[in-house]
Amino acid sequence: MIPQFVSGWRSDPAAVQDSILDRASRGDAVMGATFTSLHANDLPGTWKRMQAAGHKGIFLRDKELVVRGGYRRPCLQRRGTCVSRGMFRGVQTSLDVDVASNSSLLKSVDVSFAPIYSLARVEVGKNRCGSGDGAILADAARAVHDYGVATTALFPGTSEDDVEKLACKYATPGQQTPSSWIQACKTHTCVTFWPETLDLLFDCLAAGYAVPYAMNYVTGDPNSSGISDLGSYGPHCRCFVGVFLDENGETQLESSESWGRFPAGQPMDTDQTCPVEQIPRITIKYAGGEKQLAPGDVGVNAKRFYAQIQSGGEAWAVGAPQFQAQGVADLVRKVQVA
Image (cartoon, rainbow, N blue to C red):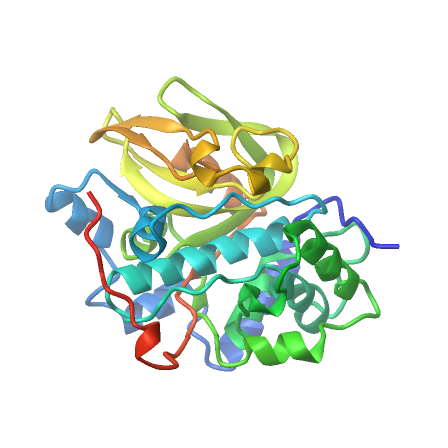
């Protein structure tokens, strides 16, 4: 029987702190202050510099249009795998940004969420999350940092639902991630660090680092400007993928959800079978006018969401994973997107 792990993300500040301290003890630049000290010329103050240059918003998922000609689909979570979905979105988005910005002249690959889930729960978490407990985001951040990520080439011809079943199977206490999955992740590691202030979180997004996050409330319905406040109580993981000025000049965030389209309720098979262009999308009103967000995304109140992240939640900035070109065929021609 495949466990459901229906609770998704588990709030465990003590475990998160232990992970941070352990990583720091081995020399990882795990805290934002340490990471920014190593990138003092290009990360701190990025959002303010972008505003001074006239930018009203940075929408990272628009880079998908550059590297693949269209948006990626929303996730189709059914079994509480939101931690791996949020981390997947962060890794994938940061990689797409890296490729599109010409920092990495490589063809974009499709990252898989599945190994992230089993690695976080079993190899990194050492089964501290049992059946029904989901996973801790710090464990997923360490999984992609230490082990790396794999591509969807691991699962040729397999539906997303069946891949999720496999992820849950190998994440069961007493199981372990298949060696073939671990080998596929090897060398494709990612920078992950904790942005300990809201301003640094804004800078991370403006600089191209997506930020998976988790807290004890789901996202509420969007208002007439396409911006959501906190919804009902429910531990859940998502990913920040953009930063923008609202109509009042306040900085807000773009959130990419972990299940289906947004707002959606229950995930639907049609989200995986219909053309992605047919999936309904949220339009925000912001200082730059109107902007239709990527499928599955919504604007959210930055201060309200960050306050909940500080109250037992988590946020981890994620860099692009390392993928090496296999030859000239892997090079991508950068195109201009209107």
